[in-house]
Figure (cartoon, rainbow, N blue to C red):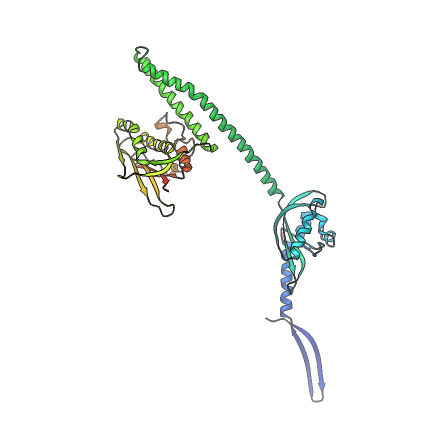
Amino acid sequence: MRALELVALNRLDEPGMRAVLVSYRDVTERVQSQEARARLAAIVESSDDAIIGQTLEGVITSWNRAAERLYGYTAEEAIGNPITLTVPPERKGEIRNYLNRVRQGERVDHLETVRVRKDGSRLDVSITVSPIRDEAGNIIGVSKSARDITERRRFEAELWRKNIELEIASRANDTFLASISHELRTPLNSIIGFTGTLLMKLPGELTEAQDRQLQLIQVNARHLLSLINDLLNLAKVRSGKAEVQVEPVDLREIVQEVAPILRPSAEAKGLRFEVSLPPQPLRIQTDRRSVFQILMNLTTNAVKFTASGLIRIEAERVERTSRGPEVGLRVVDTGRGIAAADQKRLFRAFEQLHPELDPGAGSGLGLHLSQRMAGLLGGRIEFQSELGKGSTFTLFLPEP
């Protein structure tokens, strides 16, 4: 629908003719422009950001309600005054800088700075400054929006302070763990060594009760030493001090080192212990010691939680389109499996899903450390498990 404006109304009264002449002007564009300006003014007034109009010389020409709330000046108090009304003395150079940029047609986005309220208090703000142009494209003024970021700055400062405190606490914790671990390992190794000597009956014969008690001492000392070693390794990994020595490694050799160590434990429980290796070398660049430790942890868990059936270690080259070529070391068991509800807890530190099955199960750090070490090697551990049917854990490592 077009908007028309009455221009003239003339009566024509001549002999034999009576008429009225009416003239209209199409003012649709003007009405639409006025409506657009009214909508824009409403938006500016309802905005949560302080929106301020200025001349190119920095004199305030408009001041919305959010500006009143932010700075404490009413529109009547602010309009006609220089924008430096809200600027600390040491920040007035910013005004000259952004006015010069706006005169050149630039826009200044999200300038984080400090401003002053009417009561003299300071606040942190984020400012965006844009040129105002007339219909011909000439720059005739400046539009500035400001948002209070005082709380955000306070939160960021508090977060930074907490992060520093946590970092200091973490370093102190790691230093303590490393120190106490070294202090405890020495006497524990002595206890294990001396009980071993006694159990070998080198100093003399033992009674059955003495033999049983010494074996108990040795088992518990080894358990405690394992816990201390896990804590020390965790401290090293978390602090980024874990040493990785990359060298050419044939993964088949690592499997052949692990299998003889754990096969007796498996066979003592009546389990079959199988190894499946490719005929060709499976050589990659990695840290031998870390891969050995990860495979030992995965296989030890498989033996521990499998009551019947088999344990199998496999090694193979895996082609993956998304990650590139990889190699995999896989440990398969026919054990109790892991319930779906427990699987998300599997790699958490100090988590033991079934401590009742093995009171000497350890620290609950084995899988957590294994996953962390795998990450240091550029790899990861994945698993599949079904309750009552067993589990499969696979260490994937990149193949250059």
